[in-house]
Amino acid sequence: MSAPRQPLETRPPRMEALAQLPVFFTLQGKRALLAGGSAAAAWKAELLSACGARVDVYADEFSMEMALVAGDATHGDIFLHQRKWTDGDLENCAVAIGAFDDEAEAETFSTAARAAGVPVNVIDQPAYCDFSFGSIVNRSPLVIGISTDGAAPVFAQAIRAKLEALLPKGFAIWAGTAARWRDAVKTSGLSFSGRRRFWQVFTAHAIANPEQTPTPNDFDAFIADVKGLGGMVENGSVTLVGAGPGDPELLTLRGVRALQSADVILFDDLVSREVLDFARREARKLLVGKTGHGPSCKQDEINALMVSLARQGKRVVRLKGGDPLIFGRAAEEIAACEAARIPVEIVPGITAAQAAAARLNLPLTERDQARRLQYVTGHARNGALPDDIDWKSLVDPAVTTAIYMPAKTLSILVDRAVAEGLDPQTPALAVSRATRPDQASLAAPIGNLPDRLAEAELPGPLLVLLGRVTARVAAAQPIAPALAQ
Image (cartoon, rainbow, N blue to C red; front, side):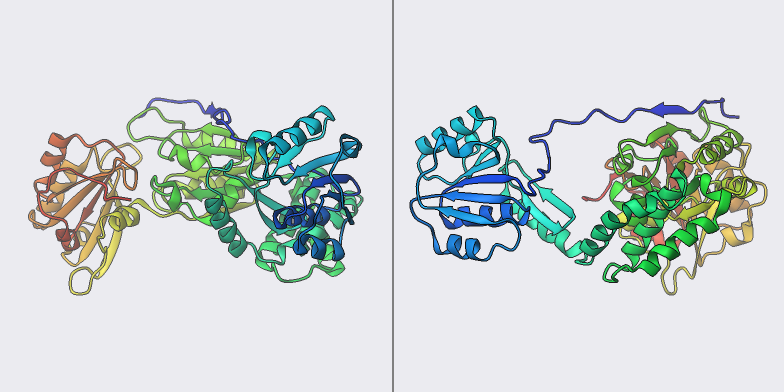
């Protein structure tokens, strides 16, 4: 029996060093000074105007691009002053932008702006800048800025292109609607929990229907949905999320969204800490570790904690290694939530057998070799070999069997399976720490595998794949590190 263990709160790591502080200036109705009339300066004038600023441009000459931008300013006005800037022009400015080829001019401009208390940027001369312009994804009022601190502008542009493709143009309409509806939601009579639920419904609908224009009927429908929950809206919710076997890139998009909206995350020892990096920083993270044959939190205590937190109105994510529906005790946690009338949702994850096989390019089913795939646990509630294994199914030569958590019972399991008719020469494969950087594997006939594993002392968690398809991995190979990622 495993030793008792109390939930342990994991503090989020301190913020790592930032090259720059990402901030957003509000420039609506404010004055911006732009020194220079070049094409590069014209782009900055357009950007400042788009923010609603009054832009005063000072230069001896103006490029055609600047003249066109000034003549077609659809937001903040752009005024062209055909002369050099002066210190007095900096008065009452919110920001100052300079475009200079001469470094001495750049230094003079930057020094004057800082003396006047005005944040300054000199294009392509970071030594004279208080702030910088990044690549922009515009779904205003949803705005994303991307910066590489000047180290790799092309990289920032490539990331912007990716985000442009991921974010539908319609998100701008939904974000604008959210701003317009905020006051109406506050005066709708909904409680704090109800208002939060409203925005959850709103966001889910926006993601599912990004190109649809929200209407007053949608507002009424969302309000009705929340009010229809009655007292249940004051409860929080529980989401069981499969974290996958280790590699954080195997976490599903739905799992990421759940982590980013969670108030509290209850996670197991087998969950990769890199997966927790996807969670919002404000979320509490409680380790409720359950490791085979080691100190473990009792399942009843985890259930009670999960329900208690949800009753406080918290959005609880129960984060489990692999898939919560495969040997993850999901049934007990679902039952606890349903008994307490707590809404519960399941986000499946990639289970270890699939992930390990994929990393080794190993099909788990194959025509004429394996017509079935089955998952078997290597230990029962008491830690011993389960006494209800279907041995006839296990010894079938046309099946691939994934044996989970077999570290302590594999030798007994193999002896019993051979006695029931399993050919001891059946190919088998043990995989340690599937998908993690230190994944290792060991192939051997199943009759020899327990002894080989004892010699190798592979660290857990351990998975054994049994069946003819594993012959693809060289028999009796040495311990093999994970394939290159």
